Length: 247
Ligand code: PXP
Image (cartoon, rainbow, N blue to C red; front, side, top):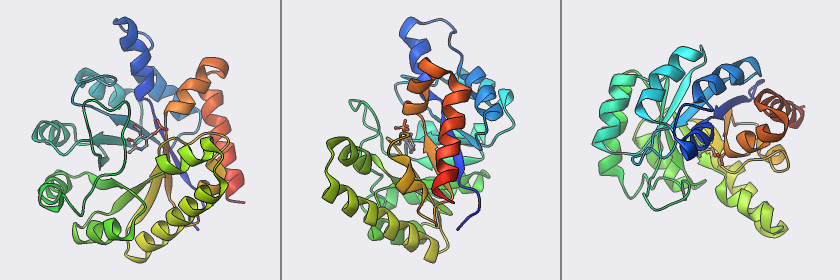
């Protein structure tokens, strides 16, 4: 079991609140700074095609506000690849993206889209980023991730989070088992497994306890909780719950 489960804090929704009014506040660069002091291990940002949260000018400001590694989530498009190659994030996480979706629905189908994803993975690898693929916890997708020589996969926990909310205990255990098997399968193939999407204080424990996972990326819940307790406190509590799940 990796001794330290890393916490990547996704600060997109600080920018969502800023954009609701236009202007400059609250500033996602300040969120990156505070996340670092609260014990985050990385900053995750998703530059979407429609720029609904993080904008191009945020990239550089966020990078200079923190020493933490930046994980840039990006669609497999030429526009994002050009930006990614220029920005050179520590990690580049390829995600599926639909303009009409409220948030990222489902993982990237790397098996079905192999011919599009392969050159994108190669471009970001050659530009020096550690490539990650955001996929469903499915052994077929993991096998293709290995063919694509992706060093990291991020397992989509969205379905797990939905089943948790619905109180569907049987479905939840089945989905958790899929996550466990996928994490084992990735590790067996030499791919570092991460996980994320929809994680909260209530549901993070069983996921954090999966021993092969090296990192969780969490955003919306932490920013929401920050409204009540402040960003540093919301991150520190998540950090504590993740540590407790590993002891
Ligand atoms: N990981 C990936 C790849 C994502 O796309 C997102 C959402 O942007 C997250 C993690 C974080 O999900 P949430 O905001 O629900 O915590």
